[in-house]
Amino acid sequence: MRLLHTMIRVGDLDRSIKFYTELLGMKLLRREDYPDGKFTLAFVGYTDESEGTVIELTHNWDTPSYDLGTGFGHLAVQVDDAYAACEKIKVQGGTVVREAGPMKHGTTVIAFVTDPDGYKIEFIQRK
Image (cartoon, rainbow, N blue to C red; front, side):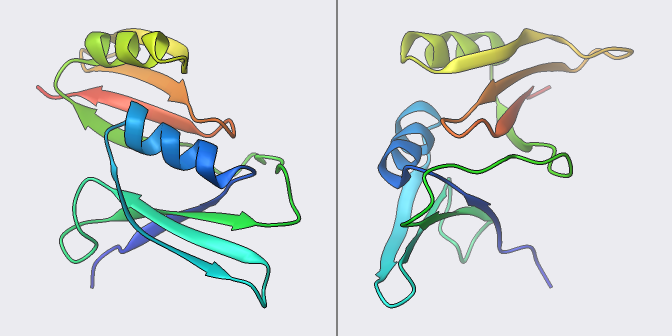
């Protein structure tokens, strides 16, 4: 067994694809419209789906936004330099909600950014 993907619902699919591909450097792996169901699925990731876990972005055509709820925490992305990754996000118009620095009670350098729908993405600096 292996983990295939994590699905999140997004209000504006093109805006979300742009964030994940341009700001986080992922690739758009596939996108398919389902007119009868009035939704679109887009899969983004750093590797092909056959090689690693990806993110499924689900856009229901009649739903412009969602409440995030309290159960979901965040996605985690390993980066070489969390400080540089945060600067890149800010320069490109993204939002950093926790600047890069050591985590509480530890030495691992982390940071948090949000995607256009408010989902948190944690940057964990490679040791």
